Length: 384
Image (cartoon, rainbow, N blue to C red; front, side):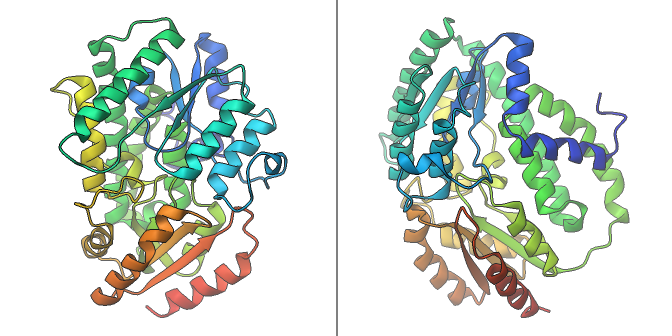
């Protein structure tokens, strides 16, 4: 289906899916008669849900202003949590059959509780993911996975075997591996894909069947490889960091590139953080998923995991050197407490390493776009 399309046509298709993130899932539900579970927003074992024959989708922040949700969630909480609450309040998530909340951030916990109350006909579940990396952490995560597995089996009316889970792990590993190949191409040829292109690739992966997404990527990759040598490379090399939970707005990504920069790497959730490493296929599946959460925080440290053995500021310094980036642009969602707590350490690390960085604190309503544009242009000009 996708083999006869050009790379630009495939990217346009992925951008359309990303722009209307639940439409493909709704179509899949009509086609298969199967169920959909919405995951709220980070750190969920999608493989375990997939193994039950259910489609897991990562709930997405929408661009629309928050209206109805104001009655259920305060305006001083972050945009991603408020957007999901707003969607639930407007009935936009009524197509879900199940919903999984998590405990990685106090705002997400509160938002998940509100969403559960706003979706009374939806099966409401919870994934308890311990933070840190102590001697007991792995076993505790496995216990949480077993609890969630029990709830999913009841919901799907299907017993989930180890082979079911392993098969799902293989499918998801393939997806992560394919996207990492695209990242490797972009790191060497940063002008091959825009940041918006990469966002569409990741976001579409989160909201559609992984099998179908794998098929798309297998058609896209060789086309990008054939195209890479004809791309003219120019611009200040920038590394993007932050933006947990919700995808950075396309306007921000476009402004970065319009200012004369090219993005050579990132640690965004809607980016490299989502696909940074695979789950082991040669061990007990639940144990492998638990190890994945611990190892993933080592590979791409996340402040919501609170592991004192990992050093996010040093990771950013190392990433700047790895990708030969000239500047660091930090995208922080307004009121994101985990990010706010870490920023002073990041600032100190960048100053000590002599790395220029720009902090952009973004509100959901994006009411300061001209100010952001001016700051980005002035920042990039410093490196020219």
